[in-house]
Length: 333
View 1 (cartoon, rainbow, N blue to C red):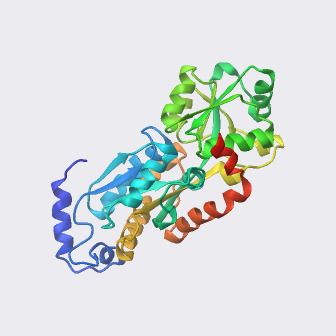
View 2: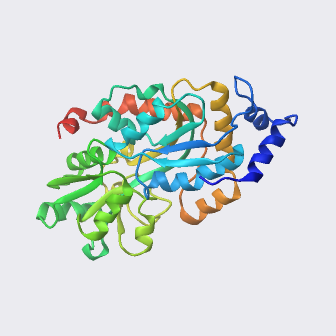
View 3: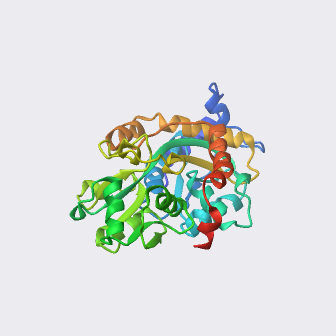
């Protein structure tokens, strides 16, 4: 976290000025006296550094801090298929100074499989800020051409391992779905705590292919270390526009687990006024030139949705996934 005397002075100025805009009114409302935010904040990423969620956070979160006139430290808390960090968000003080992000249906799937002692629906939804498809990547020397070719390689015994995020998470579930839907007969699933470590494993040859988000693998593809095999959403990818989806090859769609809705949440019990202030901060941050230019340059979609959309994304995952996926089988594995 970096200090900034100019930010402090601006905050003091704002606190003593008559607010004329809705955003300014939100920033000076605390429900308990004084301005909010009046001190530094923390943003929890429940994944390792280098993955898609971390990449978005390091571009979007500083812009939110600028809008709210405060510094926001980014803290990576990986583990337990993203449940360690998510549980930490839930259990933090409800003072509005710690928040974090995860991406339905990813973390909700982990929650359903591992069944922790806490209730994920007690989190306070803030906003959605992006959508991101999952994809399968391989080293170029393997020369895999699409999902049907990948399936053939596993059937022939040319490949045996399939890598992704930790067991019990969305990629593990997607791998099981693809085994059923596409006859993807891998022999061993290897799970990692985040897209970064999983991508490194594929590059090094520890595993032949890896499934992760398109944004997480972007640098590895640009450097020539990996190439996209298939995009797991029928909507395709803005990052890899020419990469095929299974639907392009005439295979069934698995869109219900092929794309993420990126959301932000506050701890249980956070005041509505503070939620609203942070929601407006996210909305304004996504409009900043620096964020829009980054989005256009990289293909990383930024797309604001309010707290109701974040709530729906979470609740829909909790309600829909058990109807589509044999979670007991995933848990037993």
